[in-house]
Image (cartoon, rainbow, N blue to C red):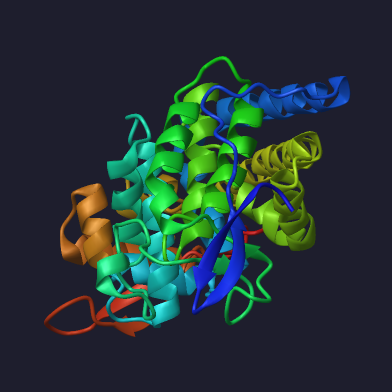
Length: 371
């Protein structure tokens, strides 16, 4: 167990986390670990270059993979199609879990689109957006640090796997973490690994800490490595949840090198998978072009193909907005793509007042998520 402080919980003494500050910390990593962080950073940059230009729209698909995987780690599971429907309909007309996962995706997207520094206000804004469909959190705890003891695992802190820092220590430790995230003298992968583990140790919110902490990873890697969309690291965490949880425990016990090495390997695997997924999207788009080759090259159906990775579930209204065509032309385009096997109609769902809209999904594309 790492540094702790004794606190009272319902009349009982509890050992809560009391982590060392990291704003000015140095890390003595083995040569092999440093090499692994360098390899991971190089893989991210390579994937980032692959995701630029013609692949930029396709790379948005990977944000869905990140949101889905990060939510799944917390036991929140929904299909990619349901989450895309939740996004398209404003999250109000689908299963609540899908709406909650869609909120996770929205925070990931907003966080990576905002080039500003990480600060307290930004953490709180992420939390407000993430928790707007959360069924089990008091409104006073949304977009604010928790005001009571927090823990991970178990119905109370007695058998918990980790008891987070006392509420009165949160703000000081989070300001220290924010200062650490602003540094440029620590390599990007080590910085992301340490920032995430420290955040999870502090556990500053009443709920949603895991998802916010994994968003922080992406923000740090994007800022330091100059990529718009870092690889969906949560996919690798979800594939080795035991290694992920053990790594965080080792970090708290002072085995920072072991945690950073594991994290770097996961990041490199995620970057390699990113390149493979983007190549698969490119191949799929070529297949779509072949399947619609009988249509005019300037038809709305053909012009819609490059936008499908960003809009894998869509209605005629979506198509009309994206392409600047009439609703009738949009419906004709969707019917043509359905006939070509590019999209499938998935039903009629309300998106506000009025008649339910027809919705179509690029299911072959959605199947690439989590590959």
